[in-house]
Image (cartoon, rainbow, N blue to C red; front, side, top):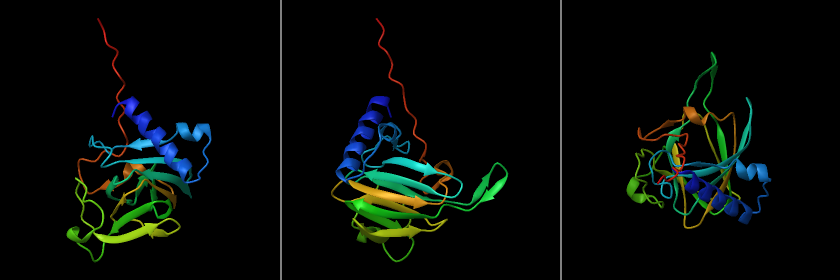
Length: 188
């Protein structure tokens, strides 16, 4: 993803957050992360997020999904960091604007979901529809993926410590931390 596109997506996310009544400082606007998951199709598979706080005990984020955009299937696993074991992340999603289709393990099938099936590996199809003001808690090691409906969607996430770089994705092609390409200067 090139830097100009990254900036454009971040600015668009700011507009969506503001339309949801979320007030951001200039410093927060500059910290918005644009994840394209390394697939080169950020409008279909991508996520824009702002982390307010991420300590050893708690994390708070705002996530923006543009209309029909999907965050691919993943789970938050247990692991070890600096020689200390940790549990996978527990997170609660609360929709602030729009509609989020969340998919977890349970009864459901690919042909019965409301969301567009993403061009990534997905294995869970129990559909949970979250509208503005509704929330759902996802426990550690729970495979899940989610997408926006017809309109841009804002989701607040409240969780234990976030270790995004150690998320395990169902699709082996996924790269969680974005790679930003610097634009090349043209030479004569």
